[in-house]
Image 1 (spheres, one colour):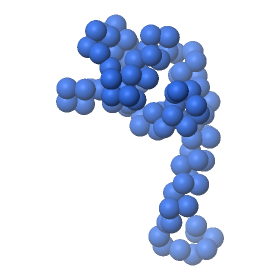
Image 2: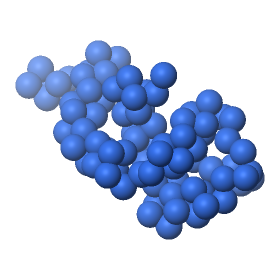
Image 3: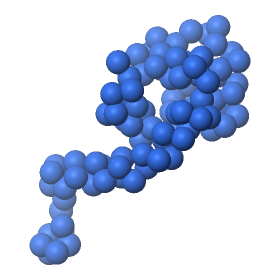
Length: 95
């Protein structure tokens, strides 16, 4: 963008930048997903994406909160790093 001396970004510029960020963050998110998260925690994160998580997941919620993968948002929970949610959706991990 700067090489073209523009002051505003286009939708294509933003899409390209988002793709690059996801690519560079891939190793970090893959580590969190594959090594740090247990199956039950991954399932909870799937449920969050579907806005269908249950209150009975206290063990998973506490663990994800402690490791700052999620955070409390009012009466619900959200990804601490919204880009992780995008990574899960983009990489086809989320079905």
